[in-house]
Amino acid sequence: MDAPLADDASLMLAWAGGDAAAFKVLYARHKGPLYRFLVKTTRDRTQADELFQETWARVITARDRYRPEAKFSTWLLQIAHNLAIDTFRKIRPLATSDEAEAVFATQPAPEREQPDNALSEFELRRRMQQAIDNLPDDQRETFVLRMEYELSLEEIAAITGVGRETAKSRLRYAMARIKQWFA
Image (tube, rainbow, N blue to C red; front, side):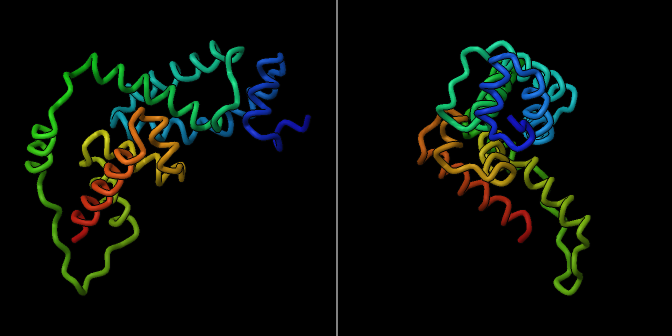
């Protein structure tokens, strides 16, 4: 098998069968996107580092049980999501939606730019990151999965363990809040 050109499911199955080179290709393909997902989800590089290592440890442990019923990236992100949720639960109790709204409402409003002053690309990226960082956790995660991974609502729902309509609603609210940030 020409491992670099193989699809993820074939690589995972080859690796489970003993092809170490197949794992190297899978890791190389997914390490960057997985790490970015974890950093954006946790907003803490140390925590993201730990979750990154634990996610790959779980992939290694589960290699013999892997079945290509979903895309490899969906399976990988679901492992990472579940680990992040477990970590969040240990660190802090879940906030109610009212508490989350109150926290968001206390965030400082973005500085308004004069209409005739164009924002630099750097400033746009900075403000976009601020807007993403200020989303409630569930909306931020849904937004990142959609924009970073270009996942469908069905895939996002499977990863996050919610219904399709809930994922759609979270994405819609996230988009509305990000638009408000730039208004």
